[in-house]
Amino acid sequence: MKFKCKVITRSSRNEIIGLDELNSLDLEFKNKNGNDENDLPFLKIYLTAVPVQGKANKELIKLLAEKLGVSKSRIEIIKGEKSKEKVVKVLM
Image (cartoon, rainbow, N blue to C red):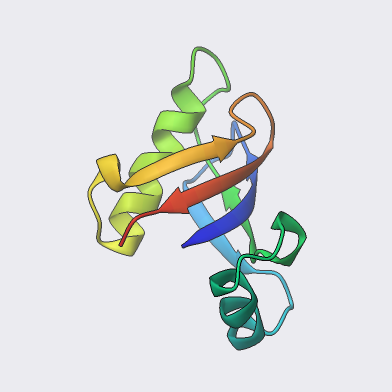
């Protein structure tokens, strides 16, 4: 599974806000057929970490692993490691 996320750092809490207002069933179908990144679902995520030396990325992976019930090694940031907007891949 792949999705895009916008990360807001230096927040008072670690929290996943939710999906963009798109039809998730339609998105699942498109993603399985290999369409581009514009069709991916979009999450807004607040993190307490600062974006220094990969701390926010590590915290993002930890939060996603916890919420999705997978190990941290199954989550990878495939685009945007040094950006607020990222593409994340999760191996289920």
